[in-house]
Structure formats: structure tokens, C-alpha cells
Length: 469
Figure 1 (cartoon, rainbow, N blue to C red):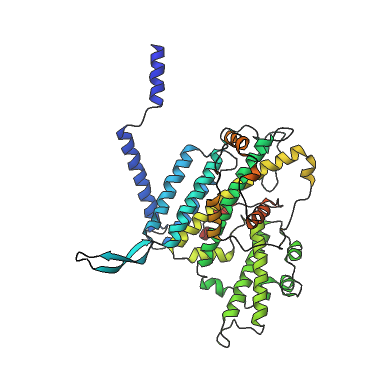
Figure 2 (cartoon, rainbow, N blue to C red):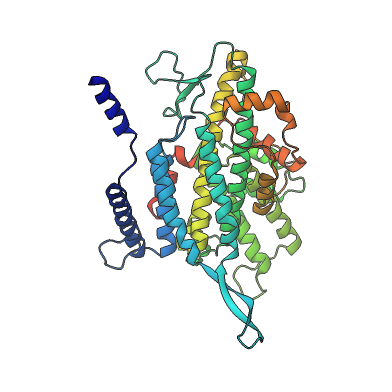
């Protein structure tokens, strides 16, 4: 009898939900969806007083806040909880479904009943959404699969906060410290981690490229333009302005003299440079005598200054891919009225943030492995500025997605699968033929800097633009 009861209990645990339970679950999901969309329709103002934000910003905030609640606690290389993963997939699908209604008119042909050939206009999903939403969904699934791959690994662990072995970072005390075997990780585990790092890095570059492209296409709000000084010298400060306008311009030397040890200092420099770029561009486009943006400086010199400022900005983006949004970016997001652009920007931003978080956690383990194999590694001075020489332009979204799709090998493999694949297929270096540009990007991403940033590691950055300003 006891055996029979045990079997009955076992069967009850694994039984499928009944029709009533399924219907009840669907009703609850529908009610939750209605509640969320009612908030969006009211622009987050549930009082009905008409003080809500625009639909575009409401959607951006909803996606940002959802990501904060789901990924904010992802501080280890481990799978997401099943209920958290299910919630993410369900609610992000709801929010992304709005893009199905963002359409454009395209010409099409229709044959009438009498056989005549007519040209008519039909609707289709807007091209930027048609291309980028599926790509971001792919990156989303790829990163979650990467976390799933760490389910059964037992080659490294994490030290508890109260342990004597815990060596906490002062600026990142909340990030768990990885612990590897005394002699370091096994060779196959180290290569597997590099394999995961390479795949995540590709996802990071693609998400960064899409986000940068979307933000660049947003209109610059008038209130941001009104807040700018009338010349680049005032925006940059005398020292930086002289370094940019001298005959022998050296971005490496300029940045080596800057204090980039804190996030607010990096953000301040980024704000100054972006403001100067906008000022110089407007001066180059201003008509003489009809605008206060005119200047006595020649067009050629101003164009040269603008290119140099762009170079510095590019280096900052390569070195700190998770740095907080600049004043220009926040202003664009806050005043943008295009729903499609708003969804693309917020979705690509949180995918970029998740990719950077996973990449940082992988690098933490690899660093712990390096220290275990060679203790002097932890005492070496970390790299500071990636060299500007040879830097290409910021990654192009289309090119990065094409490279991601061209990778012939599977992107998601557990440690066991990787060990078997490497034994049969060869070394990690043979698995993909990277172009020179990608090799440069990977090299830049591998630089171990003295500061690391991630939206998911800084709850202040994860807040909506209106909440932060």
C-alpha cells in the first residue's frame, strides 16, 4: 500500500495540467496583459489626469523596467530560473507585438476580376523593424542559451561573502568572486570559456551596432540644442580643445592625461565630446548671416576637428561598452515620438547590457584562472587605453549581423558537448575565420580595463530616462 501511495504521489507531481487549470492560467495572463497595456495607453499615469508620457517613452520604460527586474540579479554564470525565463519571454513578446502594427506603405500589383493588372499600395511591417526585431530576438535567445550551458559545470564555483577566501572588489562588492582549482582550470574548460566569450562578444557588438544606429537616426530635441554653448571650446574646456585642434593630434596621448577612473568622469567626457560634435556639425551646415551658429573658423578645419572628436568618442565606446547613456542619448530617448525606434532602442540596449554582463562574468572566471596559474598576473598593471591607430568605425549593424549569421559552428554548447566537438573537430582557433576587422574588435573587447560598467550592475542606469533626470 505504501509503495502504491508513493507511486500515486510521484504521478501527481508530473501530471499535466487539466483543461480548467490551463484556462485559469490563460485568464490570469490575459488580465495581466490588459493591466500592462492599460498603463501603456495612459502613458504610465494611472490617475487619468493626462500627465502621462508619450507612448514611445512608455514602451521604452516598460522594456527597460522589465529587463531590470529579470536580469538585475544575474550576477553568476548560471541558468536563469525557469519561472523568470518564462516571464521574460511572455512579457517581452507582449511588448514587441506592438511593432506588428508599425507599418509602411509599399507598391504592389493586383490582378482584377477582368484580368487587368493594377498597381496598388499595401502595408507591410516597417523595414527597420522587419530586419532588426528578429535579429535581436536571436541575440536574446543566444545569450539565454549561453547561460543555460553553465548548468552542469563544476570546474569553478563562487565564494560566499562570508568566506575567508573572498577577495571583494571595493567598487563591485556585490559581484560574486569566482573560485577555480589551485592549479587553474583544465585546458578544455578554459577553451570552452573562450568559445563562450567569443560568441557573447559577437552578440554584444551586434546589439551595440543596432542601438547606435537607432539612436543616430533619432531627431535631436530642440531643448538639447538650446542647452549647448555656442562653440566647441566652451563645451570641451581649454585643455581638451587645444589637444584636439593642435597640428599633431594624438588621441592616445590626450586620453592618457584624462582621469577615467570613475563612471561619472567618463560620462562627463562623453557628454562634452558629443556636444562639441553637434556644435561643429551645426556650424558647418549653418548658412552665413542667418544663424547664430556661424563661425570664422574655416569649414575644412571644423570638419577636421569634428573627425578628431569622433575618434575620441569611438575609443571611449570601445573601451567602455557598458558606459551610461550620455545626455544626448537620454534626451533623444525621452523626446522621441517614434514607437518603432523606441522599442528597437530599448530592446537592443538591454540585450547589449545582458551581453556585457555575461562577458564580464566570463572574464572574471578567466582572470581568476590566470591568477591561479600565475599569481603575478594579479599584480600587473592593467591596460588603460586601446590604441586609436587602426580603429575602424563603430560596428555597422548590418555587417555585424551578417558576420554572426556566417559563423558556421553551433553557438550554444555545454562543456561536455564542447569537449567532444573539440576532440573531433580540432582546436578552437580553427572554428571560425575572423576578418581583420572582427579580430581588432575582439582584441579591443579583450582588453582588461581598470573599470567595468554594465547597465545590469548599476540600477541607476537601468532606470528609465525620466527617472534618472
